[in-house]
Amino acid sequence: MGKKIFEFEGGPIGENAYLIVDEATKETAIIDPGFFDERIEKAIKDNESKLKYIILTHGHGDHIGGIPRILKKYDDVLIVAHKEEAEMLRSSKINCSKEIFGKAIELEADIWVEESDSLKLGELELKFIHTPGHSNGGMCILLDDVVFSGDTLFKMSIGRTDFPQGSMTKIIKSIKEKLFKLPDNTKVYPGHMDSTDIGYEKRNNPFV
Image (tube, rainbow, N blue to C red; front, side):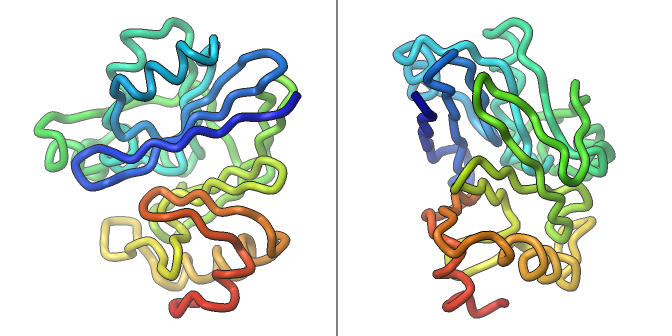
């Protein structure tokens, strides 16, 4: 037994959401649900999943847009975010949800995490890496040989730093000192665009 990872692309600006299913217990987490549609709902049903967590790499509107629908449909789902992301999640002015979706989304996490914290998902262990730069509480999620990089690291690119809380110095530091310390074969699932791996980005990413 192990894990299943499902990737879904959607939303107003092409955001990636991910389902992680622990095959042993069927406990499931959804990462960055910027949207929630029938594809995600079908995957949860087909895998007999028990949706337990919504985990956010950061709080921008394009990564949280599906949360209200999820909370209405599934009981006892817990929102997980880095503690430094509280201000953004609580303020639609900062997270830009109204500009993206036409309605304000303001949230409170049930579980606030910090650097090096971990969370059990069935028999799986998710580890959190604080990677500020795109936002104050931006974080990446490490699961064995896979890292969900949110809007910190993309294939041949990096997250924008021209939004409130953005910092080019911080995002480069986060990538070089944290993500690039992971093994080269670590697969990278980003918040936008195609997947990649750490080794490829170390060799080819023009920003770092």
